[in-house]
Length: 223
Image 1: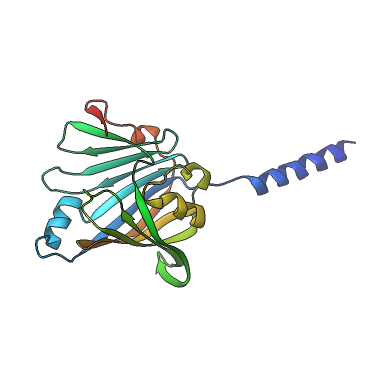
Image 2: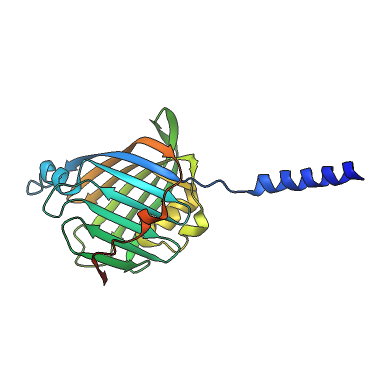
């Protein structure tokens, strides 16, 4: 009888382990390169204002990115709270933080395609890409078309269900198709400039939830 019980427990444990989801948690560091298409927007200005690198912190239901800019507003931190349905944008030298609800952007999708044959070696591994292009409906947008190609490695897994409501920039579609973090972003803010962000290091580790909380010493402003 004891052997039967042990066998049943092992079978249940094995079945559970097959269904368990191991989503990525950790820190990613990226380098950024810019290509300007406008003589009034030199590459040096983009590097100064947005930075030449950024750091991302990821948990299953939230993530944050810190762009290491050194311009008039200093660094920029974006917190995306998938569990709340809001994002928070903070600049180092501003005393307010902007809180924005998901799904308020109005865009027309032009192209969404998984590129099975377009792969790049990133951190020693071959990665597929997804093309994502759209036009903003908002007349005050600083670009007329967003043209992106995003490379991913399935080992850095995301929970697509968590991103289902994160429709801004159609990012929910990217995560649904890839189920993974984008580790190389080729993004053109047509007709102004293009940025290429590629991961340089990835460390799997526990991230303190405090990283994903807006600075309590600044005023929160709802967008």
